[in-house]
Length: 186
Image (cartoon, rainbow, N blue to C red; front, side):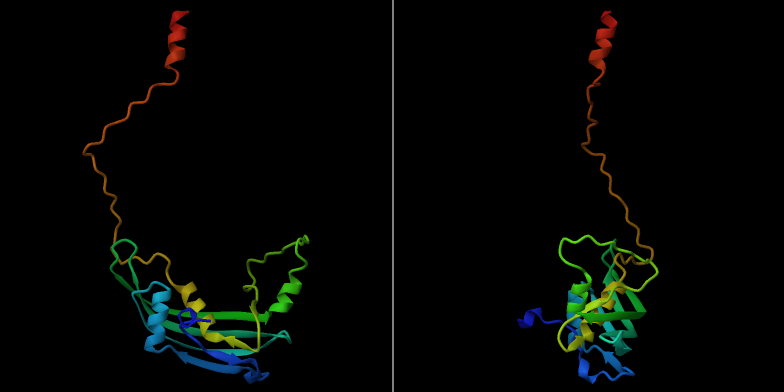
């Protein structure tokens, strides 16, 4: 993997370091990591990004990461491009299962299966491979999901500019005019 493709925020936890009761994780992104995340998510600035979580075993072969974070972000207003500041406080829960288990659960390629979607359930588990989980990348994804996709500065109003200069109303011929002429000739 080249260095320009490396994630901006790394917190790699070896699964051998996760006891049955779980492992507590506290994090705070440094200035370089915040700059990288801000560039990745098209933010004007990421002033802070910190939080806590617990990584614990789940369903004998998987892991669950549950926690919360706070972030101070500055985004560009979609109307005026002026800075819009926001404080995000979010809770999250992500489950992980080995990739082999998820692939086997998906069935054979081309096989028909009934898919049951429960809108009240948690998100489906993420695939993990190897003997570690990059908690930093999970946290970065959770930050991205919590961002306002259309930040708007208070009082910003989109005003449509309509120009009357040089507009000529297009006159289209009536498609029934020919029929009208035939009717009059009868």
